[in-house]
Image (cartoon, rainbow over the protein chains, first blue to last red):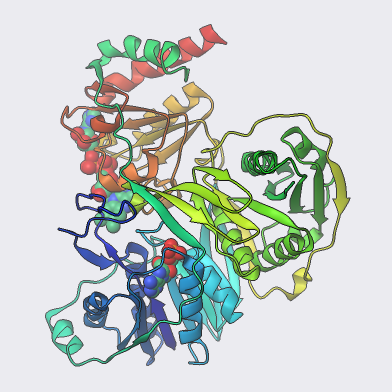
Length: 250
Length: 330
Ligand SMILES: Cc1cc2nc3c(=O)[nH]c(=O)nc-3n(C[C@H](O)[C@H](O)[C@H](O)COP(=O)(O)OP(=O)(O)OC[C@H]3O[C@@H](n4cnc5c(N)ncnc54)[C@H](O)[C@@H]3O)c2cc1C
Ligand SMILES: Nc1ncnc2c1ncn2[C@@H]1O[C@H](COP(=O)(O)O)[C@@H](O)[C@H]1O
């Protein structure tokens, strides 16, 4: 199968964050970047599908600054065949603007599957996948936790509140990947060497108009936390009293 | 005067709590922009129209009911096509969806169909005639963005539980409409909906969430967490990834960066260390309680109330004390 994976380069959220002087973005000093969590799962699924189902091609597409070539290269070292870099700096916060650029890039290339992450760890939006699907008029299943492809048809599972949905869809299709399917593999040394020779094409992104912007970015208010009621079972009565009288949740 | 729109989720014969939240938010938005009418759209299996007037209690003036035997289950294309067509048919300043499992799938499709962007998973908002601003946790909860959304209608999805549904008595006029496309023509089809044994409330809706971590040591010991949830009565059970990875709980119970995001009134963390990825899913809870034997566990930094101790010694008396307190104060 010919499979595309849209992946985003995002700051590693384990790092300590500070807000930049403009008040609307992160201070980039000391940030490390990597493939957004769910996009890593999507790469893994694409690789496994082609390993199981015979030859094919996996292409990764990322929209952002030049520095993301390093992120694309990591995917290539996992086994992806080639990369496409859509240049945009800065990356707009507006997922619909990004979806328009991805849709115009991906159209007419004959992909059987286009995979996205369920949600990017930076924006927390969860919109680019289904929006791209609408623009390309492709069937779309979001937040899938299991996938089977056979004879041009797919079956996926989605975890809902209190239930699991089984969904069928025809190919070509757009899927957004939830956790649980497949932990991404680590690049092997051989993979890293091979990646150096794999192609990355680069061209300007055809972004749509931007209607969603960040006015202000703040660190969350420190929770007043840290109050230890007591130690061991003896602290239980005091905890229950506080929950009733002070917090009013009991 | 601006009219607003709300999508009201209906499942298994009843409106979901998030339906009242979206209608209530649409009411507030209409009132903030001069007091227009609120239209709610509800889709489901026949039987729905009999319940539709309930939305008036939360501020709907008009309820459009789309009933169809094939719509007992969510159908992304039919729901999105119909919501898009209804939004286009009116002149709405804003449209409200829930960031529930269903709404997270639905809202971006509708937005794209209208050629609009979407403020997704917001925890609060302000609206004027020309802009909507909204707060939304980003970077897995490590920062909060204030977003500005232009374009009409302004489309948003609300984090479940983050905005309270306010009762106000209105009499909603109920109309019926047909789905915008024939359910039989949908490409994406939900063929099965397997309910998990739902002895408890859903994580996104429960006012109290009791979560267990690796400190519980085994799947069997989760009974302690279950029993504490039962003692509260209105509680759901959650877990850390360490626990869902080990198969002690289903992955759908996982709370955090790669699991569910919850904002209950009370969150009790039992034997949970408080890794950043876990905090991402629960730090917006109103009150956090932690029980952990390690006084330096990071969970205590976010907990309003902590007990340092062995959970196997602390939880059993806590279960009894909660039962007694509920019996006394009810
Ligand atoms: C990309 C990525 C995504 C992730 N997403 C998530 C996510 O969505 N959700 C999530 O939860 N995690 C997630 N994780 C994993 C996360 O980093 C932690 O590993 C996990 O949350 C730890 O779970 P835990 O607190 O149950 O276990 P541990 O960290 O092992 O903590 C167990 C705690 O129990 C305490 N304890 C032990 N015995 C007792 C006792 N008898 N009485 C009282 N206390 C006791 C210990 O002191 C300890 O603090 C993610 C990790 C990565 C890398
Ligand atoms: N700049 C980007 N480049 C490539 N893919 C992206 C980009 N932004 C978002 N995506 C894809 O869309 C998914 C959802 O992003 P979001 O809607 O921002 O949560 C991500 O997991 C990626 O798969």
